[in-house]
Every structure is written in structure tokens, then in C-alpha cells.
Image (tube, rainbow, N blue to C red; front, side, top):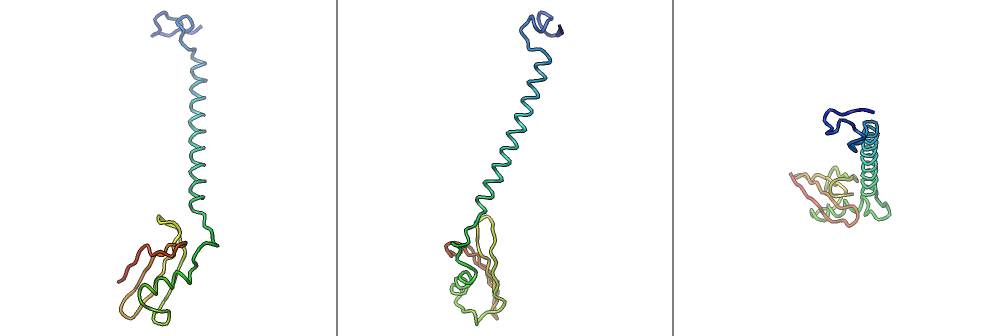
Length: 125
């Protein structure tokens, strides 16, 4: 029987205090539980990220339509601009097309929502 210096009666068992071996076992169980919960949270977070990031290609407006939205908003058609480019990307706004083109005077950059075709951002310089 082990004794504890701070136990009022000097004996772990007699005082109703948990034995050292049992305490060590409980501590290990708590550590394992914390690690398991952290792993579950990490896995669930990853799954949620993938779900948010999943795109449904059949619902996208497409690069051509995104370019048309940007050009129409700027008042041009494809024959009046140079270096027309578009790219589908995922960011803080979800899936969107980044469309850019140049005219003689300005450079345009648009961010078009990939499902609705809404203009999320427009920059000229």
C-alpha cells in the first residue's frame, strides 16, 4: 500500500483517494480521448471544406458566358478587346470566374459568380 504525504490519514486507500496506478490509467484515457476528439474534429472540418468546395459543373454558367457578362457590362464585344482571358477559381466568394481584358485605354478585371453570373467585383486601371 502506498502512502501519500499530504493525505490526512497517510494511506491512499484508507482515505478514499484514488490509487496512483488508477490515476495514471485515467490520465492516459483522458489524453487518448482528447487526441481522438481532435482527430474527429480535424476530419469533420476537412469533410466540410470539401463539401463547400465541391462544384456542380452542369450548373456553372461557363467561361464563355462569364466573358460575355463582363464584356456586356463594360460596353464592348469580343472584337473590341485584346487579351480576353477567364479562369474558374474557388475563393472566399465560392466558385467564380475571373475575367480580364484590355482595351486601348484601360485594363478590366471582373469577378463573376460561377452559378448565377452576378458581377461580384469589377476593377479598371
